[in-house]
Amino acid sequence: MGSICTLKATEYADYKFEGWYEYGSLVSTSKIYSFTVENDRHFEARFTAKYGIVHFGIQGQGFIRNYLENDSGWSVVNIMYGTTIFLEAVPKSGWKFVRWQGSSGSTSGSIYHTVLSESLHFEAIFEPV
Image 1 (spheres, rainbow, N blue to C red):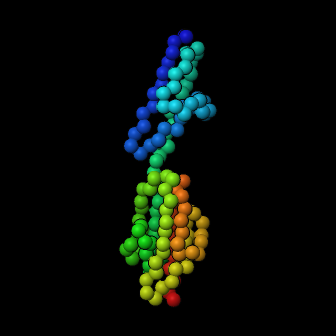
Image 2 (cartoon, rainbow, N blue to C red; image 1 turned 120 degrees about the vertical axis):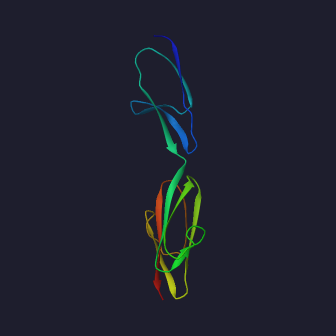
Image 3 (tube, helix red, strand yellow; image 1 turned 135 degrees about the vertical axis):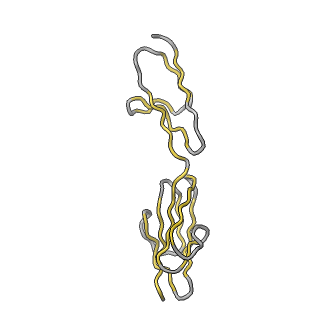
């Protein structure tokens, strides 16, 4: 009792230190936290991923520029949180772009952008002309 205790959090490659928590409450956002031991305490170091998983898919005939350039299927990409994602749906000859569909909602513009704050999935929907 009365001794100084120091906690040190070490971040690893794909994770960012969020803070020290005690019984669910944030105590400190500093990677190094010192306190005087007066009684038993229980701390938890919390980390968050630096990257989100983004799924890109196509329904019909077309492609998503820069992310899914092949004719069909799905692609999975790890993208750093805070990155602005620019999507452009490009139809093949004889097809037209209809809408984006997925966890970001639905929109009809062929160019779509968002700042990544969570893992998402996008699907470009194409129909015959």
